[in-house]
Length: 344
Image (cartoon, rainbow, N blue to C red):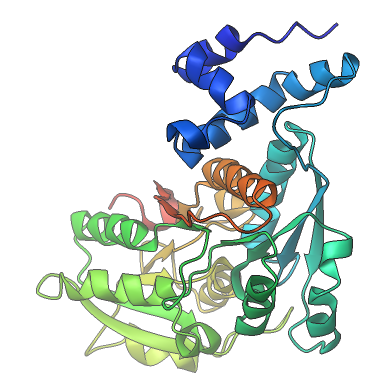
C-alpha cells in the first residue's frame, strides 16, 4: 500500500519549507516569486512520492495541471553511442514520474520527416531533440507553434533554447591536463570530415585547449573518412603524422566510432598501444574497458543529463511550450583513465 503523501515529508527531502511546498502544489508559486527550477523540483518529487495518485484515489482534481502523456525523443541514429547510453537513464527518469517515453529515428535523407514534425502534436506531449536531429527546419517549425521541446547535446548560437549538454570545454581541459602530466609532446587530433565541416564544438574546444598549451604540447589535425562497417581506415592518412618531423605520441580521437577501426589498424601494423602511441577518446564507447588496450576516455554525465532533461521537458509541457525561462545547462564529463593513455 502506498504511503500517505504529506507536504512536510516532501519539504524535508527537498530542504525547503512546508509553506513553499504548499504554495507550489496549490498553484500559487508564481504569485509569490518562487523560481521555476524550484517548482520543477517540487513537482518531480511530488509525483514520485504519489501526490497525484493520492488525489486520483480520492477523486479530487489537482490544483495544478499535470500533462504527463507521452514524450518523444528524436535521435539521429540508434547506433549512436550517446543515444545507446542515455536511453536507459531517460526511461528510468520518465517512468519514475509516470510519463511515457518513445524514440523516433530521424533519417536526414528522408524528406517525409519534415512533414511529420507538424503531426507530432497528435502523438507526443513534447519532444527531446538529440544532436543533429535538431536541425534548423525542425527547430523553426516547433518554435513557431509553441510546441514544448528541449535539445540534448546541441546548441544554437543565435537562439536561446532549453538545452542540456556536456561541457565539452571542461572535458577538453581534463584531456589536455592529463596528457600534459604524462609528458606527451605531440598530439594528433583525429576527426571525421563531417565533424569538422559542421563546426563540431568538441573539435573546436579540444583544439582551443591544446592551443593554450602550445608551448608544451604541439598539435596537428587529421581528417579521415569514416569507414563503413567492416572497412578499414587508410593507414596513409595517419602515417605521415606518426613519423618525423611531427612524430605524434598521442592520438586524441573525437568520436568513439573511430576508435575501433584505429585500434584494429594499429594491431595490423604491429603498433603497440600505449607503448608506441597512446590513444584517448573524447567520448566513451561500448566495450572500451574490454579492448586489448582498454581505452582512456571522457564519460558523459548521463544520469545527470537525463534528470535535468526530464525536469526541463516536463516544465515545458506544463507551460504549453510558452515558458519564459530558457535554460542552458552544461554538465562536466568524467575522465576515465585506462591503459591506452594511463601512466607511463
